[in-house]
Length: 122
Length: 124
Image (cartoon, rainbow over all chains, first blue to last red; front, top):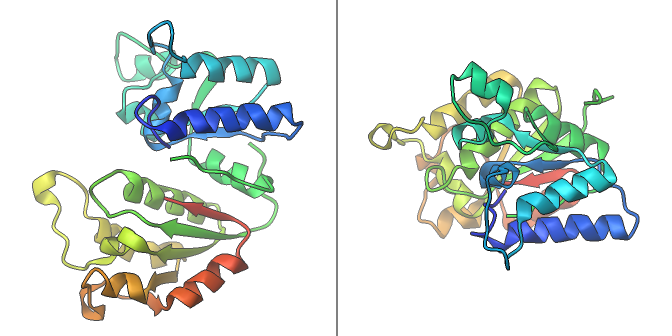
């Protein structure tokens, strides 16, 4: 739920997810809400000697086929948008990473209902 | 998305004041979504979340929607289990007649029991 780089909890979520997978736990879904939606922006360009949180999520999703869902309402109002929504709202640009999708809060509820444990960061 | 099989008991903790951050509002959005999917919801207001319950909110000047007004329509969505921790009201100098109707005031001990009863909990 926290913005990447401003808050440690964003990186903690990433590290926790990576560790879960290393230890053979399953991840049903990662849901990005509140300021956490900024993790989905592929325009993140941190300095070269700093971690790129967006790219690490992308790599994790690609390697383990993890569902990365960004809350559509929280994302759009903060300027995190994919090509389809950019067309709908007549924006010239879009920035949602290819491994992320925009969807509704029902996906957060669905994840809660189908998981043994839900962990919130931020 | 898999469709949920049967309704489950979900406890939602509202811990944030209504306007300083987006958490209270986005927590409310999650409550409304879960209600739309017919889950058995219990809402517990605690810590600064008790400020959400003040009944004389006027947020026009800061161009935000009135949070208490949104909470008052929850019974229309069959969300009727609203609880607030007594000690958290008292420590913020909020009296019982200053909060919206339909909220049960419970002790911290009862709040702890409520949390212990639930396996599905989400906090905002």
